[in-house]
Length: 325
Ligand code: PMV
Image (tube, rainbow, N blue to C red; front, side, top):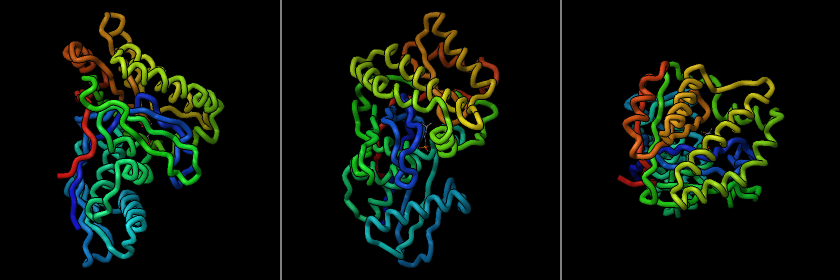
């Protein structure tokens, strides 16, 4: 009863921002992402009759507290699904993702955990079923089941059975590149969970955010299909700005941006003025991801590294979906 799975993280080009059901993690809007090969989690799950509780090791260290609780509560869900009450697991994960800084390590983390746990328990689930199970660990993680370009359908049903992700174009479709820009001061103080809740509950701009989603989804899918970089980049950047604008309309207002975040945004805009096509997107943290095309890699990387407040730039290609090791 042991299995190992590898999952890559993903970056949303059209953001998931708000839940209609907190317990089942059902979103208020469709979202669309690209899976990244540079950042991943490998997780081994072993169910063992000798254990009296779950054990969670992350990067060679035993985890306790809230992070442990999140994993063991997630395993409860798998135990219930597989009718395996009282059977505990040893979970061993390694993360090739800088954590807690808007790099969505929870996406690769929960996708790898769900895949390894269902495999270890011999549950034989389809990708759709796995995406639904993963969603209940972390929303954005349900997109990391697949490689390439992925849409998470928000669904309409109260029980969440129609809320899952599906691949819209495979990894081989398009050699889009993403630079993850790591800033010096990165520890975020408002989690995505808390930030989206406050925004849904209090932001005067939230209805405006929702109203724009269907058109953004249509536009980005057409751009991806046509491999039209400027079309995809401009809708992704605008969608990110709208998401972050909702936080300014919340009560109390907040922002994930720091001065270095804004400097990187300006760097990307200045690259465009020089004729280098690049666009940014930002999740629930200060770090910035920059979309670019292979031919501009050298210039994009160099310019980002020269920007004040940037500590690292990690380049990534489009990544693959879940694999079992
Ligand atoms: O799934 P969570 O709770 O990590 O939320 C992710 C929210 C954003 O990263 C801001 C957007 C997204 O779609 O990934």
